[in-house]
Image 1 (cartoon, helix red, strand yellow):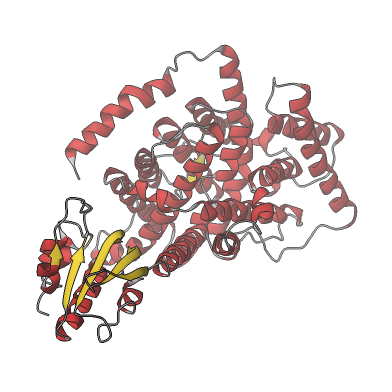
Image 2 (image 1 turned 60 degrees about the vertical axis):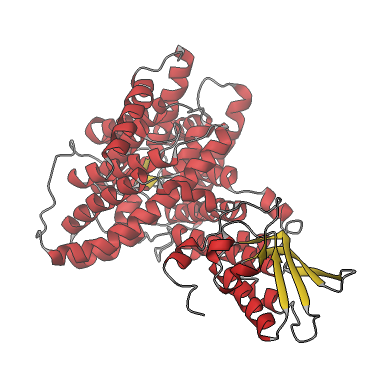
Length: 543
């Protein structure tokens, strides 16, 4: 690791982010109130999510709650985007379940530590910047798919307590509520949503989601209404998380077991966190630090693994709750984590009385706010490829997981872009008064268009002097250079003279046989070709 990079990051962190989070300047009492109430709302929504994802991973609910507290606190303090909320997530839990089932929870803790180290390295080497390669259609598919996943995850709350088996997307084979219990549950969900919709119209003194939870919880508790509550999922009572070195053999075999899981978890965690970083940044009109977020997620997971937590990453649902509730600084995220710890230590009996219907109503409003409804309207207006990518990423997110969906979306978008550019290669052909034939190349020349480029020429029918002009083209890679060499060889083999014009200066060094055919001009381009390595290593030589 680069010590200078680490020192620079530490100075930047200490000088700005940490001081701002612990002693924010210019924060009014009203802003403190908004941030703290937003944090309380988020903390209430975190409880059932952490418990549910613990069930998914096959661990004790406190393992998920501790992860939500530690990951949430550390990322709130030093993360790349104030306003983001992190904690235990289903995307990670579905990967953990097989590891826990085969090797036990101690191996999970060791894996989370290694996962964090990998994420720290990703931040130090600034790998987070590659998130900018994710196209906008993939982002739309991401938010749509995640909104559907959040919706599906709430459906388990409409099952009889004790009969549902929580899965990655919340669906299970449990016994569904019916009759009056179902009607009551739906009515309370609808009431929560109505309160959340109405409160901003009436007052801004309290976050709308918190108002919805308090109103419905008060009605249920005061009138003793028999509906599923948080305590029906599991008890959240516990103590402070304690330092604990994972009790696994320090052998190469252990490393081989946990390394694949650690890489997958690190990749999924960073992809979801960085996409959420961009999404929250768009909503708040502020940019976040991708590399700093990678480091923060890594530090959080490393610490979590030593304190008995299951690890985590950014949570888009809770982040949306925070932003919609007015959370804009690090105070809200810190408050959410501390409130969650208070729930675990002191307020478990009270929190366990909150009806699940209130939390389901909050998450349903998150779904409505998260889904990119305008994407449905523009599907017929955008290019077909973009429309396909939006739908594809949405479906893959729901059917598999976020990381797979994003990778599939980026690959399809990249292939579509490459094909589009490959079909753009063509040439304007004309003859000079002196009898020379000129091929004026149009479009980029790269691996996708190399074959089409070669097919443009007819060496046997062309006159004795041929000029290939690249003024309106660009040579991009080794495949392009190889195509130029091939054409030059064909014309030379036919005994005809060929000139190459308006190629970049470095083509003189990169082209082997065709190098002597180039004609210098004052308006030659100066771009660098991506094939330098191939020439230096002899890939283009020996023709």
